[in-house]
Length: 148
Image (cartoon, rainbow, N blue to C red):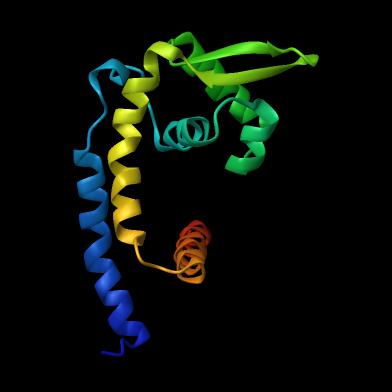
């Protein structure tokens, strides 16, 4: 069945609220509740979970936001005991950021369900198809930002 652009938009407008609703129902683990976590924190934690320890600059580059914004987020999450910061052994001016060891299971529980769902949804797709999914979602995000 060939979908026209309008058919696709209609299907996505019906689907997106359900996707968001289901993602929200995954819920924040008890260990992370009360920390006033926002979607931006989820993105930061996802990078640290999947890539391991990173510097503030590396996080800023990946999140496509200013290093000062990342520093503020890291400070908030560090005060809450979710993240730890340490000096880089090779350059004492740099700080390495990581998920606190006692919070790893909670962060994994929070992000793991969504990651597993994406792996299931993407199973059997080609690299080009996966690239298209990410490209389209990024374009949608940009277009929403331009609507303001």
